[in-house]
Amino acid sequence: PRSIFFSRHGESQFNVEGKIGGDSALSPRGMKYARSLPDLIADNIGDAPLTVWTSTLQRTIQTAQHLTCTKLTWKSLDELDAGVCDGMTYEEIEKAYPEDFANRDEDKFNYRYRGGESYRDVVVRLEPVIMELERQENILIIGHQAILRCLYAYFHNLTQADLPYIKIPLHTLIKITPKAYGCDEERYALPI
Ligand code: F6P
Image (cartoon, rainbow, N blue to C red; front, top):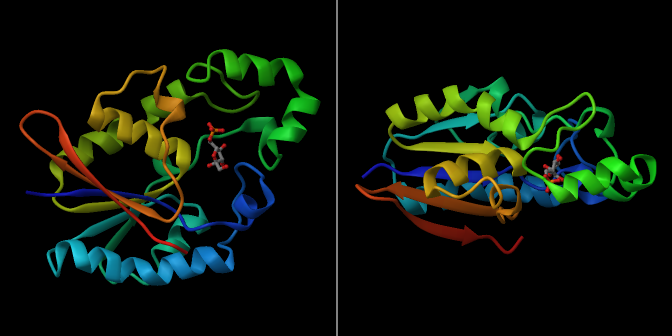
């Protein structure tokens, strides 16, 4: 059976600083995760063919850099656009836009950042990615927290209310194997 692998990019400089969005590079820990990915994948599928999809942001491309298989970048896999809040910490957002911060907490799936996107918007832009994903063999998607929540919710049939709270930790490979009904799942967390 074919497998779909999900991984967030390795820890980025913005992750270290608690800032959202942006296009920062990997931290030294993130680089270490990138170096260990090829072995982790090989342990799972041996030398079966694999295609890697990344976003256009450098933290996902750097995470894929040591993998030798076919790679494709998708603009549709870029992280949820936080608009005017891009590059801020949650504390800074709460100070600058207290009402927005409360509204997001109230309805995280539908809340749209000023000049940016909501989870609902992201679900819509991921439709072509999911269509293509359904036709492919073994795929590894190196993505972002919000993006992987949407893809994960699709395969596990989770509700819109639960979707924005799905736990997708850093430095963890999620393996999904579609079955006739539902999907099997395994997770491999690397102690990095
Ligand atoms: O902090 C990393 C990050 O990927 C941000 O770029 C993004 O805005 C956020 O996570 C999405 O998570 P949440 O919807 O919980 O804020």
